[in-house]
Length: 235
Picture 1 (cartoon, one colour):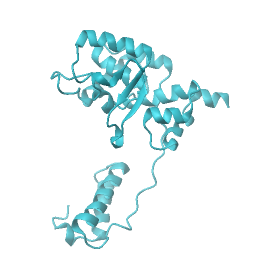
Picture 2: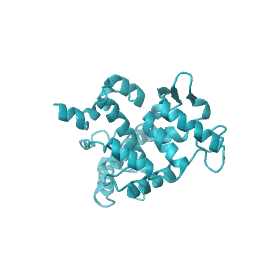
Picture 3: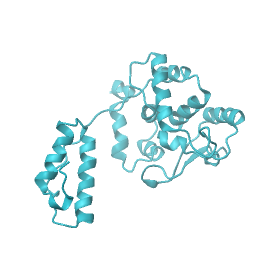
Picture 4: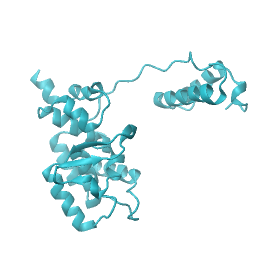
C-alpha cells in the first residue's frame, strides 16, 4: 500500500492502512481485526522493532443472533435437496451439530455404531471430541454406505482419497433454500445453530450442548438461549 519496507512505517501509517480497508475497500470489521492481529504479530515477532501497533484498538464486537430454522423448515429444506450425497452431508451436519469442515473430513471409521457416537478428529482449535449419532442418521448412513461404498472419507469427492468441497455444498445449500421457499438465509452453519437450539428447547442441559458443539466456553453456547422461541414463549 505504501511501497515501502515495513520497518520504515510507523503507527500512523498502520492506522491509515486499516482505515483504508474499512472505508475504501469496504471490508468488514472482522477483516479489520484479522489484519490488525496479523500486523501486531508481524511487528512484534518478525520486525522486532518498537511496538507501533500496541495502541491501535479493535472495534467493539458486533452481537448478532444466529438464524435458526423451525422443525417444519428443516423438513422442507431436506426434501428440497435432490442429490443424495449432499442431502446426507447436510443431514449429518444438522443431526450431529457439526461444522461443514468437520463433516467433509469425517472418515468411515469415525462412525461408532456400537456406542452411538461420532468422533470428530481435530476440529476447530485442533481438538478431538465426540458428538451424538442418532438412530435415524445411522440408518440413513447405512443406506449411503451401500450406495457409495466409501473407503476412507465418508463423503469423498470424485477422487475417493479427497473430501468433498465445502464451496460445492454451500451452493447446494443455497439452492435447496430457494427450492424450499424459505425466506431465511440458510448456510451449512445454520443447521448447526438449529441443532443447538432444538436440543435446548427439548430440555438438554447447556453444558451438554457445549460439549457436543465443541465450544471452549459455555458463554458461546449461551447465545442459543436468546434465539429459542420456546424458552421465550414459556417466559
